[in-house]
Image (cartoon, rainbow, N blue to C red; front, side, top):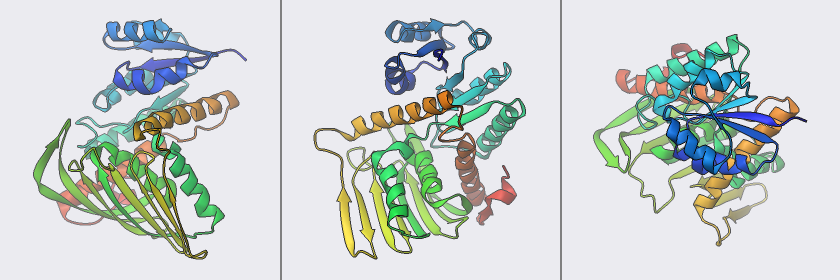
Length: 331
């Protein structure tokens, strides 16, 4: 089988820390780089050998099997539109799919732009995929398996406290475990909180899923990085699962078996080790589907679904009314 040709657009910190170390370990992959600042691409190529291209057109003329769009979220729309002009076969996006003002300040326009990207990709037969690496945490996979094995039944309620650094991921985890969110009603705090690179107002969201589960999510910058950056609880007909942080502690309560189990990562590894591992698992799963000619593990539409929820939140804050997502922001 010939080597896979993987294009990388955006050679900043995320690419260097979370993607290229994994790609460089795989012998049958050829890498091609494009970055607006050529020096950055050249630095990546020096550390993780590959070809450097002066333009998106030159990269696409190289005919990559897939292109990883790893720019900052504020630049991803421009990068995607630029690549789509050259009819790529496959695009793999970092999260969130589009966020012109940063991931903690997603707007309705971000959803509309993301939807446009996916529609344009679909029109030219370009397959799209998302990273959403929290799905590849050991505990996320374990939870998904135990729900079936222990016959927990339908999700009834969901609660979450989430740092904005994890916000899009946690919305996606709700989709992953409980199915799509269909209706939202949101309130926003008055104060603008600033912490590190994040500046945003707190938001509290009530929602309903397609399976008629109800839930609440609180988004904030005011969670200390020392402690868990998110906590999610899923209450089922016959059990409950509480998960937290970057592959952090998880508690499983089995109502039928009258059993409570606690799962935690080994003490010799940090949460950041598990966080980094989740990128490798996500990327390797994606590459496996490329080789097998299968659909990606996380399709691009999940990026739009996440932004659809965020657009609904913003609309609900402005109108002080519930928003039915499919009616107001159809995909």
